[in-house]
Amino acid sequence: KQEVTQIPAALSVPEGENLVLNCSFTDSAIYNLQWFRQDPGKGLTSLLLIQSSQREQTSGRLNASLDKSSGRSTLYIAASQPGDSATYLCAVAPGIIFGKGTRLHILP
Amino acid sequence: DGGITQSPKYLFRKEGQNVTLSCEQNLNHDAMYWYRQDPGQGLRLIYYSQIVNDFQKGDIAEGYSVSREKKESFPLTVTSAQKNPTAFYLCASSGRHQETQYFGPGTRLLVL
Image 1 (spheres, rainbow over the protein chains, first blue to last red):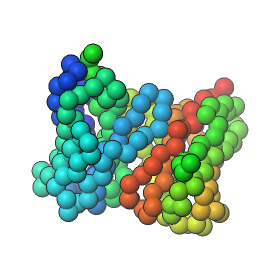
Image 2: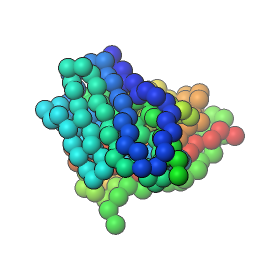
Image 3: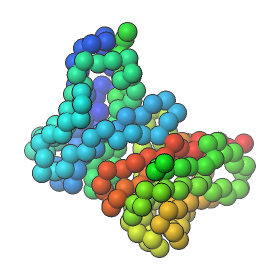
Image 4: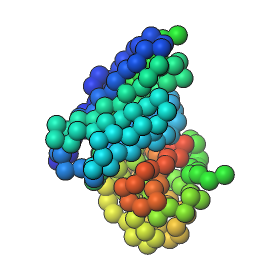
């Protein structure tokens, strides 16, 4: 059964720093992997989706990579800003299995 | 404005009562999903529908029911058989199954 893990559960980083969020999965036979952002009490906002045939996707200050063989994905955030503070979740398909998320706090 | 709407924002259920959560989308998406989120937890899939008049159980379907009579609508009923219904419920849609998902604002269900 697919399991998705996100470590650490929480992270605090000074404003302006670059940072990496991690997502690992146990079954490498994935269809795609998606990164989301969730603000407190709100729904999820899709950030990036990586197909199984791709190695990375970029959107603005965000870059997501995928290494299926090692069961890992990373979300790189450049030049962090206080507005980046949120919980970041990854999810893999098939099955659409979510990790528990990393709660990110950018310190002004 | 294209998007997904969920109503109500807050819903209160009495013991033994069935309640229905609304989810509507005007994105012309074929696939729709219902998730449950508990504090400090990721999302768990309750039901999904790839096309009108068809739906499949997710990981935690017991105590829930859905219908998909229209492309735009995917209501979720929380039945009295669901013994621990207090949670944040999120609806999502995607163009086709397992493509990029777009989420609604959520409904918080509380038990009186």
